[in-house]
Amino acid sequence: DPESSRIYGSVGEGSLLVQADLAGSIEAIATGGARAFYQGSLAESIAAYMREAGGLLTADDLAANCVDVYDPPSIDYRGHRVFETAPPSQGFVVLEELQTIHLLVEAKKLAVEDRNAYAGDPRHVNWDLAGLLSDEHAARRASLIDPARSRTAQAVSAAGGDTTYLCVVDRDGMAVSLVHSLSAGFGAGVTVPGTGILLNNRAGRGFALAEGHPNRIAPRKRTMSTLNCYLVTRNGKPAWVGGTPGGDGQIQWNLQLLNRVLDHGQDPQAAVAAPRWTHGPTTDPWRLSEPETLKVEERLPAATIEGLRRRGHPVQVLGPWEGGGSAQLIAIDAQDGVLRGGSDPRDGGVALGR
Image (cartoon, rainbow, N blue to C red; front, side):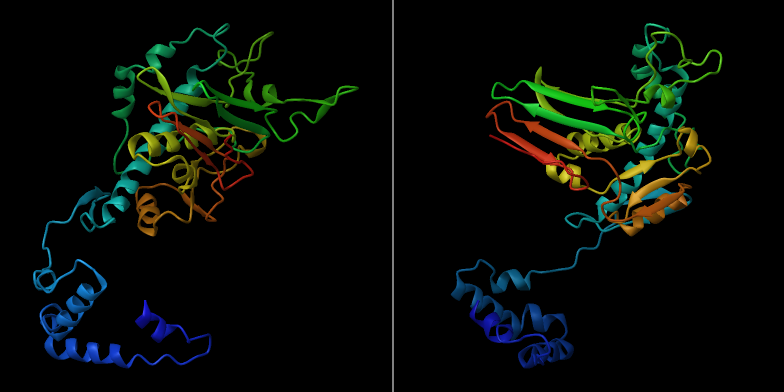
């Protein structure tokens, strides 16, 4: 724009910028109020320039401007009602995040309680997976969630380790979601001589010695594992495939990604780059003394973070990209065959196509 170039084009660091024209406009508004801008000479100047430049804004558009007065959207929050600006403002996003993060954290706590109570090698432990995934059980567990207050959590395992995740889709639309792990960093720290193969330490992190525990150690029994990944179908065809390494962070980060793509319609890269949260504590022997925490990236809105604290969540704010994980995600368009990939900026993954 020539005028913008005239005003700012020759201004550099240390230069004095004198805005004489802007000063005159501010004086006109100070004298004539809003009418001076929307219906006076300023409005005429704006409309004339729009016509000259081929724009669509007219003097009538400016004159018709008015301020909306409305009942703002709000939610109840620990004895308070939090209000925000209505659409098309993004204010409702803060309310939605506040409500959603609290509910997802509470749902995660209850699901982990079920995991600790029942999950084990199905060849050795008789437990009703279908019952745990039923609508009836979900309703019973949901009834335990207080929308205004955090509940005490059981311990879960750490998010760190030596896990790798990848996903791939071929030209025919066939998809693979693969997660593999040595458990802790370098596994058990033991390499089989002559092979270079590191042995994992999943047994040391997952098995228990207590009588009756679903993961009590036994011959040829597989311990409960944090490893999980997902594939989502639509009308019987693959639609989303993804996952992440990260111990028990996996079930939390995968939940957040699915929530973002399925409930909020985000594209893969936006979903994996979005602010992330992780709830603890851990059951790893070296972390048993750590307190319960809800770790959140500082990119979450300040109102969301403070709202979670007021609900009773022990929030710990991390750096902007320190939430953990290395999520990889592919969206599959069954109609045109287009693949859209997302790779976590927090780690060394990459999205490739050919």
